[in-house]
Structure formats: C-alpha cells, structure tokens
Length: 203
Image 1: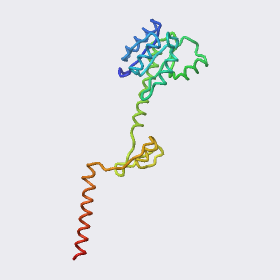
Image 2: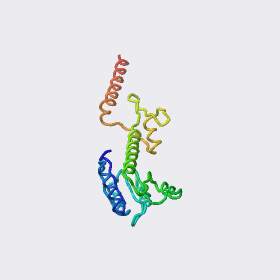
Image 3: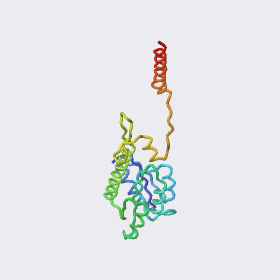
Image 4: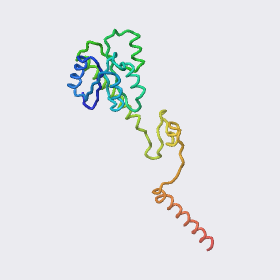
C-alpha cells in the first residue's frame, strides 16, 4: 500500500481510534485523526483526504451527516468513505448509510485484518477512478484533418464537439503566425497573378 493516500480517522472512542491509527500507519498511509464529526468536516474542506474511516455515532456531527456533507462538496476528486458501526446491520441502517454515500462498512469490534481488507478495496477503487478520469480527459483527434471522435465513434469538427458539450460558440480568426505563414503569401501570389494577367492583356 502507498503513502500517497491520505486517510482521515474519525472516532471518539480512544481504544478504537488508536487501533485504526496503528494499523493504517503501519501500512504506510498519511493519517490524521479527529474525535468528532465537526473537526473532521473542517479538516476535510482544507485537506481533501482520499479515504475517511468514520464512526457512525459521533459528537457534534455523526458519521452519516459527515458523509452527506462530504458528498455534496466533492467536485473533481472522490473520497472513499468507510463507516464504523456497533449497531446490527439492519436493512434500514444499510439503506440510510448507502443513501448518505457510504462506500463500505466496518463493524465493532474491529480487527486489523478487516481494516487492511477495507483499505485494499479503497485503494483499488480510487486507482480505478483515477484511470477513468485520465481516459476521459483524452480526446481522440485526427492528426491530419483535426476532426474529433465523439462518444458515438463518429468524427466531427472540433467546433461542433466543443459546442455540444459546453454550449460555447466559436468566432474564427487568424493568428499572427498563420497570417505570416499562409495568408500573406497567398495574398501576394494572388496580386502577382492579377499583374501577370493585366500584363498579358496589354501585350
């Protein structure tokens, strides 16, 4: 496992928090711990951890509310959220957690193997998410005609491609480099052809 992932632990029980800290630090993660949901939420807005391991029942803000706020605030990045609970995993509890945006669960009492397994899954999902984002950011463009391949595997002008996705319209102009390289030589050639025609007519 890699230290490139930041893990925030949110647990008010000192014994459980210490266990989580010990296991995650031994696995090489960059970790920080908080005793209540409000502290964790304040820290999240600044640091944006990759993984949050949070108890359900917390002072000031419980784990579900923390997860909801986290999901509402996420834009460009994704945080994997693991919820800890001592409660029986009933259907209503599961539905409430899933609706809040929880990714995975840990049940008290927690064992080190369970923590390790959840973190492995979290890393796999986060790595996959990053790969998808990189692929989505690549736009296939023809190196000859500069047409772009769209989602339907059809080739279209780049202006149309951008307009369909952003609503932006293009105004065409000519940059100084192309003016010197292409336009002015064409204009000079055209002027010369007119002179040649005029000279030929006069003769």
